[in-house]
Length: 172
Image (cartoon, rainbow, N blue to C red; front, side, top):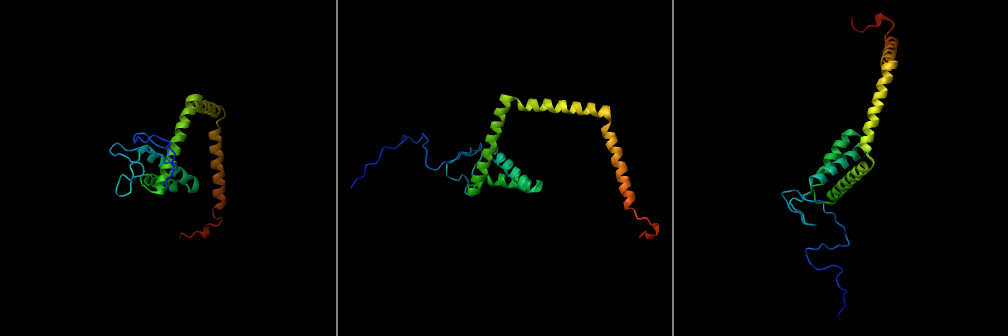
């Protein structure tokens, strides 16, 4: 019994990429190695991944660590995600994918800035705010007044916390 199979949906030329059911992102290679899809480049299980992807994965890990637990965990998350991005494991795939998201967000931000000049507008607004704050300070001397009030308040608290009887001094 023979089965009639439909013709392939893509040419059988090995130089033409063929879409498969599972999608795998090509994360690039470093200048001294060649990447083959699905095959680790290093017998130790490390893949050659572009420095941009590794850096972006580190940024993603750092931001996640900062949001979840603070600056110390941010550093650990950045180093860990950067290291994972070099591994040919599922965790490495996640790290590289998060790096890809960071890079895509960066590219999108650049396009938005090119269209709307967000950075230039923000710089101008910051400069204007600084100028107005400086003018206000020169006119009203708010910093000096706040400093005097803070000093007198702290002296008041210090006097209230001091022991009233000098004979209770522990240093004899």
